[in-house]
Length: 341
Ligand SMILES: [Fe+2]
Image 1 (cartoon, rainbow, N blue to C red):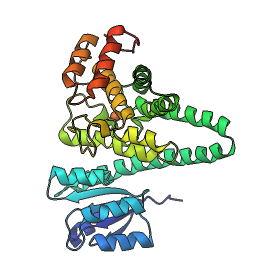
Image 2: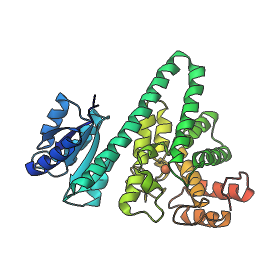
Image 3: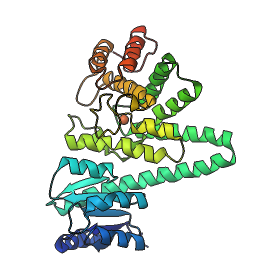
Image 4: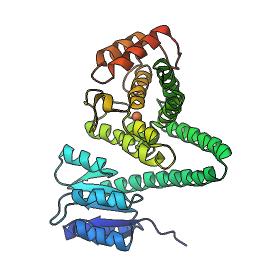
């Protein structure tokens, strides 16, 4: 018996494009349906939720970019790939922020679409598997809190290790970020509850990398803007993944761990002291360990060079107060991270 492949809703005002995609994807076992505008797409999804939606950004009637937030909110298990002939990076960034998993430029070759579909559906399968696993653990936590909390914590550590194994250059990174965040938090006199939340957030800060293409994660040269934006989707996906199992403070820390103190980060919504304190701490710990580790496209910085870099970015990328504490900590050599040169 052949197992049917996932269902795909093709949303485009051009019948010819829908036809080509429907024929090609149908021949590869996908179950395809079609809609010619945003409203019709919503109606179709109401009748039968799809595993994937491939949607044009600009269409007569309601545009794809207009209905995207509604689709991702109502159907969180549906993956969305946006398509458009206009390559406006701001529009693409907005679509990714609104929950689209990927973007394809028109005109496209069918093989390109197929690669994008397969990779998006692969990531969706993994993300759903993890989400279901967490939900199952969540139910167990309700039954026997102590035992299940340990189980949950163990599962998270396994998950983080698995994720890091996708990235050749960051093995042990989350562990290092936890240690350094804890050292910073202690120095900044955080209370026990704040320290506990910070520990969870530091452990989980990169959990959203489950959806990041390993080829981009391990790219041996500098990233293009599009690739950088793709990697940064982990700060949107991660919080959604763990939201059912951790408190809102932890979710917020994970959401904002790439925010820059002066607002210069990607698509930031808060600036300065409005960025959660834990996120500002993790940002420092994360950046420090990235600096002192070898990357595919550059060598690791020495501790001295990392200190200079932190000083240089104090007040812009980093909270100046936390940057000072970090510099003091490095100088005092309170912690001895791996890969330190
Ligand atoms: Fe990150």
